Amino acid sequence: MAAMLKVLVLNTTYEPLNVCSLRRAVVLVLKDKAEVVERSTASLHSEHRAFAVPHVIRLRTYVAVPRAATRRISRRAVFARDRFRCQYCGADKRLTVDHVVPRSKGGGDGWDNVVTSCSACNLRKADRLLPVDGLHLARRPRPPEPFAFVAVEAGHVHASWRPYLSWATQTV
Image 1 (cartoon, rainbow, N blue to C red):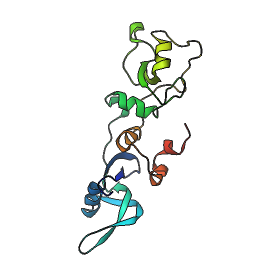
Image 2 (image 1 turned 90 degrees about the vertical axis):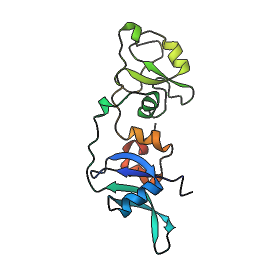
Image 3 (image 1 turned 180 degrees about the horizontal axis):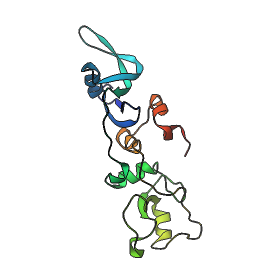
Image 4 (image 1 turned 60 degrees about the vertical axis):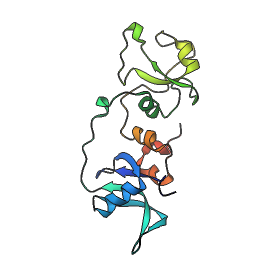
């Protein structure tokens, strides 16, 4: 269990930075590089001490985060930004990446032109410009927030993380 547990890492500003292993989180806390913000009722035991299992830690020194627009675009990153939902119909199966303005019509590969699409909607849209009958974007594509990558790393969002991940409390 302890080897599989993930811990949310926050910047000094409480901005989500990443997810790390429980072991890494404990090392950061013991070296006084981070403090525990949220903890479990479970504990870890050493020969002389017991430690509450951290769910959320906050770094003691600020880490500069690169601007989201400069982050590398990947399928997983696009899916995470769009919350693993088709931006045309809301489906969460058979996901692909679609260019809002097709490359054949001069569209680029930037964050503002790629969205998550199910294969059915992608096939239906083909290389046409919007609006296409019955297809419209749920929201305009934009560079992802830093917390979008937390979902990619974690796979599961623990309830104690929700106050720090504003999107986790929203319904999709």
